[in-house]
Length: 172
Image 1 (cartoon, helix red, strand yellow):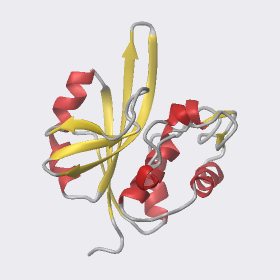
Image 2: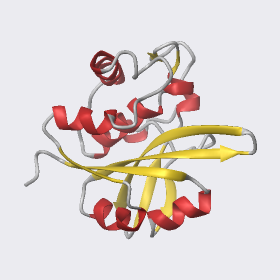
Image 3: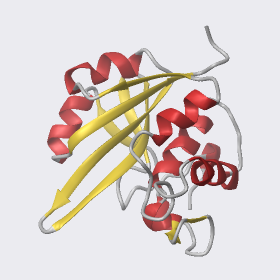
Image 4: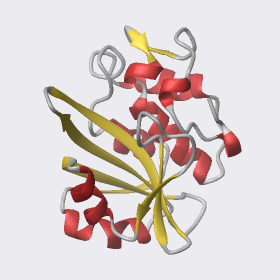
């Protein structure tokens, strides 16, 4: 697991028995809490992963953990902690919204042949482009999304995305 700057780049690198999330390993169903953990790290907050997992599972024990994370849990998690949060499903506005916030979580569905699933990834706009964290099953570091989230989503064939944009509560 690469935790350079306290970021988790690939959940599949998490040892099976470390950071259990519900019935399964975080390597399988942990993308939701990992996205929140990575957003906190991107904004300079350092918290132990166990704390994020506990908070997610305590808040919605049936929906968070056993099979993954409820789509709106990251927004609720940050709101409960005093962060300003904006949620959008309008892809054409994702770039504008993400650029106006300190970090974001992108939720989307994916399909590969007969497999279907959903995923959360943290992202940030920096140096003129969008950079994602824990995006792909083979990620080894930050993932380059390019200059447009809408284009990235189309290229990857991800669908029904939700952008959860977060402003650092220490900034006005």
